[in-house]
Structure formats: structure tokens, C-alpha cells
Image 1 (cartoon, rainbow, N blue to C red):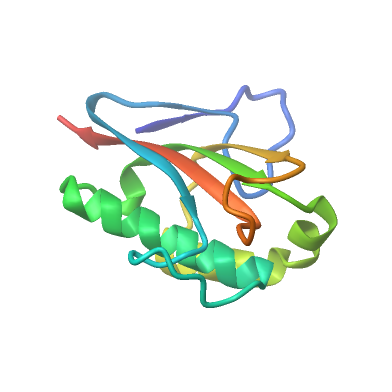
Image 2: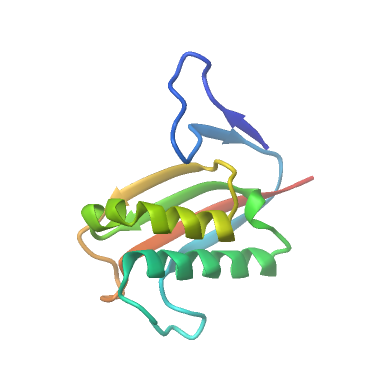
Length: 130
């Protein structure tokens, strides 16, 4: 995997502007903050992010992939203010579960998600190197 960072651009914080990779692609559907049995254990934004990231790791493992194979993440959040306020806890969960690498990321505030209690939904694309 190669991170794409034009030399004259400011360095983004916590993500990469682009990623180039070659290998077997893995697409993970939007994961929300419930467990594998579709049960929510918290209504806290950071807690739901931690669970969604755990779910992502579980699906990647099923494919024989690891978190460091993630090249792209799209985050849908229902409350930008709550999401930003939870940055420290979200960052901690991200580092513990995913790592410190920089996937290409997009975060979008939405009015609602399909599951009423869901505060975050995260889609992932990973590439297992050749």
C-alpha cells in the first residue's frame, strides 16, 4: 500500500488523501454500533464507534484480512457535534482496534440511519496484498 500525499499539500490529520494498493479486494458493508447478534449495548457515540470497528475487524478476519489492509473508510454519523466531541475516545478505539495507519477516509453527517439507535455507520474497503 502506498499513501498518496501531494508534497505541496498540508498533511491531513488522522487519514490520507489517497491510497494505492494491489491485491485481493474486500468490501465490508456499513457496520453500526451493535454486536454480531444485532444488540446495541450503548447509545454513546464513542461506544458505538468502538463496536462498529470491532465488527469491521471481525468481518476482515473472516476474509483473511487484517486492519492494516484497510485502504478506504466512509463514516456516516448522525450528529457532527457529538462525533467531534468524542474524538479522543474514538481515536483511542481506532488505534486499539485498527492501528495508526492512514486510510483514505470520508465522514458525512446524515439525518438518520436505518436502525433508529445507530449513531454511526462505517463502510470499509480493504486490499490484501498480492
